[in-house]
Figure (cartoon, rainbow, N blue to C red):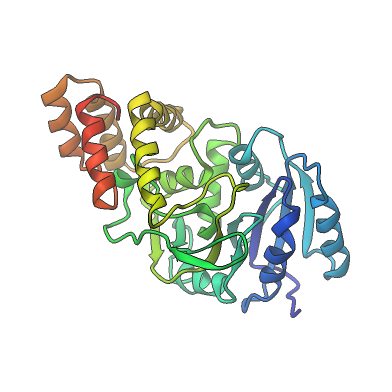
Length: 314
């Protein structure tokens, strides 16, 4: 494995009882065409052989390739944020990493090719489509393709890509650290999308799949395709009706309003208008949300957003 003295990408790997698939994930990272990386693994209290596997790779890889820390033990969102906000981790770029995927060989290089075109100091976030596979790594489809512009008004109601595809620069990581590791948000990846777009940063969605996203009974967040998509839609509608979607928006709004977040004046106004529209009665609410311009993809999801707006579930 060709190594550099100063890795350019800090891979933020969160683990919890990851024994069945962790070997494959670590092996795929080792084959990256971009050799300038190191892994920071935060284990959240595994009871299987996850820590043994991590220690095995740490011992056989060159020194400094893999560091192991203990997570906060409060779920995957807190675990990822604890890594991203760890001031000991300093790199030019950072990549979120799940324990059970398989990275394509050029995953990091494709991200770096775009990130390095962004001006220094501008928060930048790369994300991509995924190739869905089953527990045995058999392909079962692709994640939905994002086609509309990625911007703050979109981030208010949807995250376009899985966090396991996200690679971001130090300026974007600084936004996470400024907001703090203890912020209460729905997901670390959605939060990063909100912060980067809110600060006027750059976001690029790569339509080329960057990894094999394993779908199995044990993963925390998965994509369902084909006939299972119908069940996902029903579940999403049920969550919207029960108020989970609105509660999640409440959490993001509180986090954005706490004063530790950088928003452009225009996006601050958009946030204020979004907050104001949510609390109005029906017609002013719909008109206000339309003026803000919030949307979701694909079409069925946007239809669900409209329904949520009508019933004050947004």
